[in-house]
Length: 126
Image (cartoon, helix red, strand yellow):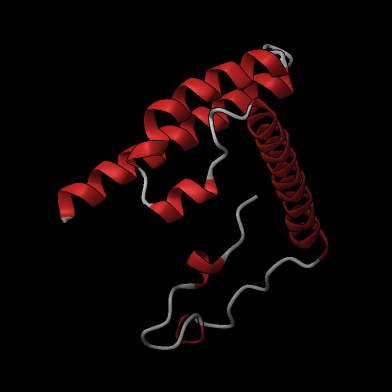
């Protein structure tokens, strides 16, 4: 059972890497949509049959280029929204640090109760 799951996870990772790479190529203008659909279709033909039934339902059918194209465009949109959210969050973190800097602890004992992480571990990255 474990070997079968390992194989399925390997195929899922291959599909995800291919999807992510194709989205990056599409968004950067290095690939056209028909090129990306062709490449994704090849990977789907190899990997999709190795997935569980539920896994297969998650991915488009390789024999339907229109489904593959819609899947890629949707995935690119999700990637852009995630990147935009990350950029907004980074800006908010910078505003937080600039406008509301964390106060220094009054003394070492107040820095963190026993069993809690040190204040430095809770600081937001810049």
